Length: 411
Image: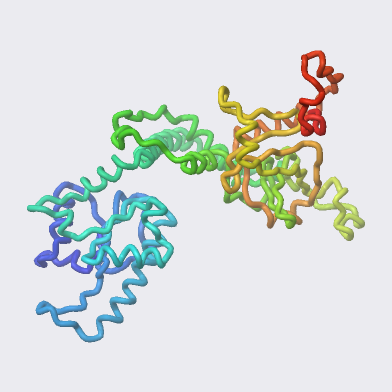
């Protein structure tokens, strides 16, 4: 996409004309606008990159004199352009080239509008048009390739995106042969009183990921950045994304939902998902009147408390040989979750709440297979057999050397 007030002026000396001719001459399909377009009219997810002119309104004539009344129009165009950039960043991740002779002020202006290029590693390149045109050569792709060379994460994500697209095409071909399968799933979901949209999503997602082929990652591409080690915070960020959905669906409850209740503490729903579905309304008049939590037809959640480990606790419980935590029988340790902390979920106490009373406090959901680790340990905890304690002397340990914590929670 190209957004520039001179994009249709073929006889104009503006370098954007040269850039457009370069891409069109090589068969690249371009979407061209001479003013900021409406976002709903553009399929942004299919774009490879966007070229934006920061000075969309000409404020000087050919002699360099100010054109009366154009300053206000330029301010309005700038507001529309910043809003457009914000909207782009909301719906897709695509390289954006901003052309201007005032690159220093643009970064500050974008930052004031909560677009921090450096902090958030945004794919925004502020360039003078002359920076990417040299002796008739247009270097947009060269800039993008340099960016990818220095961002291994972008390279891997693009390879993954291509694999997803191939799997989607395969899935569409397979499922299109049967016309009425969505009706069967929808009707079955309604019969079971579950959300049909969730069921359709599960079927499609499973089909797509089941048809994905292994990624073909080139090690040489990854190593173009040299011997660079990620920071601890970067590692925690990617691990958190793998473990935690921080924008959970609140229409229904599910195993793994995390709540931060009014006491500011974190709680995990351990109740099986099939029991979390509110299939019926309370039949008893007394239950309806008193909003009874004992009613078997009320949609409830079973909550266990999670406590953040301190850095010292996390280090003390971590087993570097196997890359996991040493857990007691009465707990599961998972992380990083909220605030990139590791949490110990204790099994001894269970709090029962009506879902509609805690729905607004839902802040996240632990993803598979990590929630399965918790539920499996919880099942073992419920079925555990108490064994006689082995005397410390039998192992050759004196009573004085036993930590107090171990005696308080014998597991």
